[in-house]
Length: 368
Length: 246
Image (cartoon, rainbow over all chains, first blue to last red; front, side, top):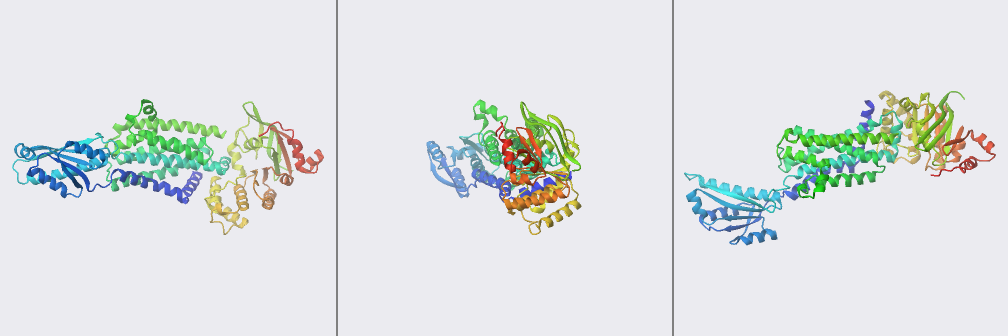
């Protein structure tokens, strides 16, 4: 036990002393969250919107004035023509279009309810959602102003349409994706490289000749990276909650339990690579090409898996990040519990056990 | 000579059809400096791995420090030291941390660790470098430190695998002074080398050719036997007959 502690202490010294590694280790999650976060959820200000006012009555004019008054929007021009909406979206000139029906005021005053159509360019899903929310809230405000004096409540019902990407794929999904990516990178690459480094420098030979058990070498390598990765999970979650306003809807405990499981999966992969390779460069290359690329391609966080050809869909099932991504998304965004994700968890446990068995086996073969 | 610390009888290791080490028979005594020579691919490494308890022999008998190579590899590992030509220290740890780490691996107590590391640092004259990273040390010092670390747990035998590779002749000579010191204290030195001048420094040497030990005696006797003036010629005469290349 004391041996193991001595070893773990040494591993921490390696990591904490290497400034570049430290920077990668703790800077990467922050940078990735920032890049992904602001590439997708940039603050929406002065977005150009197009208004088609078929009513041109007092109520619609007032509503337009209110929209104009908000700092979020800049009214491009009041068009009459629906084709202009399409053109505007395609040229990227406008982000949102609002269409008031003819007889807007009449319908509202006599039927107490009227629909207003809001169209958004959802190819940038986050942006679209944000804009639609802003527009709806302006309309809501106006509605409550009207209702202060009314006997029967008026209702202006926004009818929203997400153009080009109706299901809003990609929105907020990047946080679980970044988590999978960072853990994959930290655990697989760092572990593999740190074990292979001992081989390269010849210290592994000395360790093997010592009474220190080979299995403890692996354990001692895994422990520091497990802890460091959990710190990364915490920092990613903090950033996403406080910086990106993306709350965690489900159980944090469950989220950490699942993350630990995935970290173990990655560590096992890292150990497997390190057993099979002899140089740090090879280990790094295999980690990047073999692990990182599939994570980006097949986890579903950048490219929807449903749209892929069947063979690729089948391949995606053996990528551990895919399952972890589904799990984190379910817990964080959908707020689901273990009942909803036990199947994915079980698959991840299965992959991990399989990897653990083969990497320990090949480690033993390597020794004899 | 007194006590036998390495005893091997017909020790053989096969990998499939390939006989890497063929019926090795040798005895090494306490406090002896034993040179283990052979061309690349002659089977030195395989033999050494068996002696270190890293590889289980296919057949034959051997005891290292009195422990059986088949069943007592853990005890063997506790009683031997090892140093390779790569010097095997952690470059990003300080001198002191390296000593503490390797001591810790061999389960020295904290008190032992403290006294041993102080002793070692004074002995090597590294007082000013103790808290500096190993990466900044000159090669010769790394080598000395590495050797001293291998002796930290007071092993009965130290295996040195080409310990002076890539080191200049002056530093090599200094290193051999350390080896003599250790041998005087009763530690057995088992050393592989490609340098024939180093072979001359050994008490006895064995020369392996194609997995077999072809000669085993003191350098003086070997030269007499082959009627040549230098170890170089002895080695050349034997190794010339080798069929296995690298």
